[in-house]
Image (cartoon, rainbow, N blue to C red; front, side, top):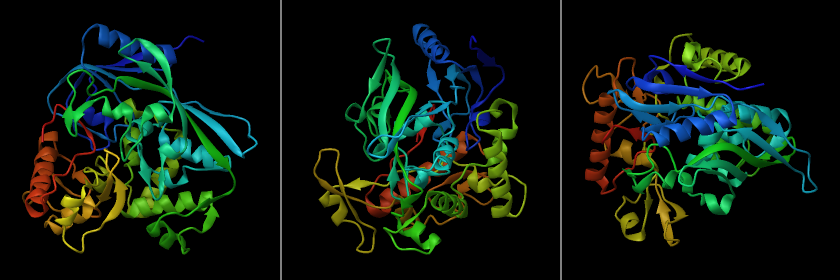
Amino acid sequence: MAGMTTEHSTTTFADLTTIGVGGPIRTFLTPDTRDGVIDAVRQADAAGSPLSVIGGGSNLLAADAPFDGVVVRDARQDIRFGSPQADDTVAVSADAGCNWDDFVAESVAHGLEGVEGLSGIPGTVGASVVQNIGAYGQEVASSVAQVEAWDREESRTVTLDPQHLRFGYRMSALKASMYDAPAQPSDRFFPTPRFVVLSVTLRLHRGAEGTVGYGQLAKALGVEIGDCMPVAAIRDAVLKVRAAKGMLEDAHRYGISVMAGAKRADTVQAALQAQREATGSDNPDFNRHSCGSFFMNPILDDMQAARLPQDAPRFPTVLPSGEPGTKTSAAWLIDHAGFHRGYAVAAGAPASLSTLHTLALTNRGSARAADIAELARTVRDGVEQAFGVRLVPEPVLVGVTL
């Protein structure tokens, strides 16, 4: 059956993003075939139009001004499970437009281990590899076998393996193609990478149990780090821990027409029920109206790390150069610079830090992109003044300058 590309009128970035801000979009397309996705991207590039290929809208802060370009959201959501291999792994392929948590739920239901710690992260399968999402001891990079993508530069489809993808902390070659330097957009490929993800194949392990690899999660489960637990129990615990920190999307967003069908109806209903239980009401939860973690955890060289206070968190890591480095906690720096949970630039301001987590900048119901940007600048500059560390924003900033 032939596919269809739907063009939506009067759509805004506020409709499409988890933080709920952003101006009107000139052209918003939702192709439901592979060829439709490619054609939408090709036609936008041929016309010289600004292009934003959007996933779940969870890692995006768009300006209040109109976007005079094309926004494409892949409407395909198929998941395909391969046959078990001799090493007890299963190749699972999913369309780029598949909701990420739908993918995790389906994988866990099939008795597969490897992504349960990433439960509840808003977004899509395609976006997961651009950002190299990670949480609770897992990263998507650990499971990715290959990515099929459209190469905008060479106008052809390509297959990228992990070596080509060059995964790092919240980074990939896909994301890197959008920037000349951290937080400095490229003139050529921004706000969409050179390679537009069409599908992702992950290799997951057969087994009803997974390893608990993170202290906070182990505490929630009442076990020790390194213990094994049923993957379904790990998934449930991750969702509850994320809910307690407000680091889930507000499931009410799927009630508006332009978001209908972007997530499976059964998982939307389950998310709404869990949200009612977590918040005690069926009202919007403004702590969830965010981009998730707004700033990345800084990666420091030895000299920078030595300037941190003695009690600052320190985790060994590797610098982009390959040299040993230190990762510290952006949340710790923000809090210890005086920006505590619920902080706002002024009383009654429409944007504030989450009342549950200092890393989330939230829309309290009427914020505009300018309000979020003002809050972000205030926090970033305050942390730099206090500790000499300049925080780098995690979301893609479309028309927004900090």
